Length: 166
Image 1 (tube, helix red, strand yellow):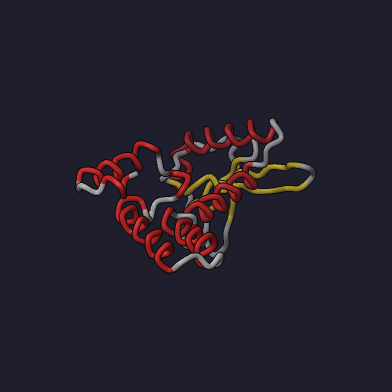
Image 2: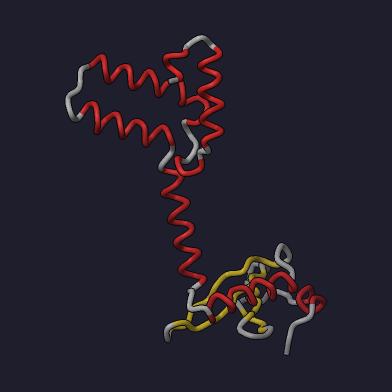
């Protein structure tokens, strides 16, 4: 039997975790500390999995049902929403580690230092990097837009350093 919003407010914590099911695999888990978490229980490729949909009251009953429906649609299409979420987290961590500055420093280390270029060439590359680092250094490399880079180069050009901006 589907849950009602008034029922959810009335669920009190007890000494052990317990679950109240809604419909189509959606259930609310009430923990001993009083927190209430939404989960979707589903099967994909023969194995049972559970997907966290958020905590109540941040995720209302209607929102949890909407998230459940979205996840079930993905499951019908053959996509595992839990695996997709894990991959997004991995991509996010990789993206955060691939900042413009770290990629540029790696490039200098591999292309210039490891190939034993002249010290003046290495210093010049680091000098170019020093002009770009304040504006876009910490940003993920895949999030930098061409217009953003153009603004930085225009600023260098306005400072009278035309050769540097080219």
